[in-house]
Image (tube, rainbow, N blue to C red; front, top):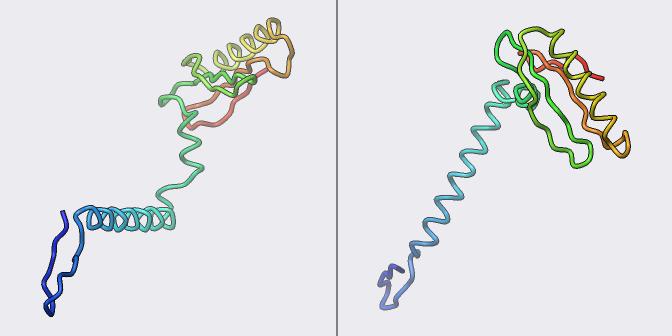
Length: 123
């Protein structure tokens, strides 16, 4: 619906509901972008933390991640109590995947990570 205002004997469209909502949404987006920029400047949000958390296991545990080199998919293979178990499992699964791959360049590879998301080893 459009709101009309009578001014000097002429009708004038003030603002449609759609345009008002659109303007308010644009203002909200700008406020959000400014708040994220402020958080980044204060060090609360960083790309490094986001990447690290993606691979991090639960506290005190170790995670094995598989990476399919053919299509780039990543998937979790297991959670282990010790780093040695995780690394051995990653190496065993990588060797097994190499046997069945048509080419070693597209074989699935497995990597072990600690609870901080730090790479421990593979292959």
